[in-house]
Amino acid sequence: MAIEQFPIEAGHVLMFARAIGDPNPIYADADVAAASEVGVIPAPPTFVTASAQFDPDYPLRPKPGQPWFGSGREATGAKPTVPSGGKSEDGGGGGTSLHAEQHYEYHRPLVVGDVLHARGSKGETWEKQGRSGTLKFTELITEYLDQNDEVVITARTVAVLTEGPK
Amino acid sequence: MSISAASLKVGDSKEQLLVDDLTRTQIVMYAGASGDYNPLHSDEKFAREVAGYPGIFAHGMLTMGMTGRVVTDWFDVGRITKYGVRFVRQVWPGATLTATAVVDAIREEDGVQYADVSITTVDAEGTTVLTGTATARLDP
Image (cartoon, rainbow over all chains, first blue to last red; front, side, top):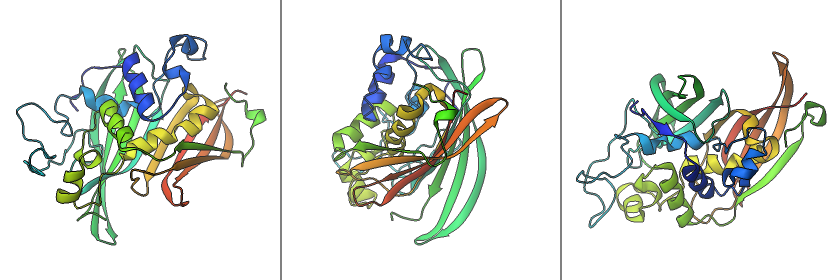
């Protein structure tokens, strides 16, 4: 995994909390956070998914000068790419690879000021027969480590590759 | 805000309205905040014409993120030690979602009390869109 520096920043936590519709002031107000048990603005439980912003090669972000599989003048200008080995939230397979499961284990609270890096490894793969054909499941384990090289969060992502939209 | 093991019992539950009439704009906000710009979640033309869906739908991770409130409001975000979900159904614009968490077990591990909860998020018709579990550390 190519995430070498993922700084946990207050503005990013605020944006993320707004996006998930969580009005808890602990994500927005440093004074509220200071009075809490953790003492610092914490990251919401699913925040490390936003590490995608710090992955230079993340395939589900358009990059200047490179083909993008979403629409501009036409419905598509490029073949979708399915990420492999890297971060695979939602798969990016243009409607064929979907996020099936997501699991997080928190070794301590993640807070503003932490600087993470991530290392990913492939987990298991398996197949199941679904209504519309064979479903192929792949698992990705990602460890998010802090500035002291200690694991803060262990994430397990399960993606499913279907033969077509449901 | 932390919860003591003594004040909690198996079967206790909390319900949380997560969103009423999910907007396309909120899905775009989530794309921007999370960095997941998969056009399936913001690009109607792509979702319909290329991917073959009826339209765009929410990131599974948006539903997981919204659902997290049912445990962070209850137990405090700093007390959550595990949170995992299965994405059961796609969530479309206009959805109204409600999450329910139920205490399945209260247990001690290495002298520390934990609550294990199961979580279900349903839409306005009562159809389950997400199921999950979480563990929270409790006060004695």
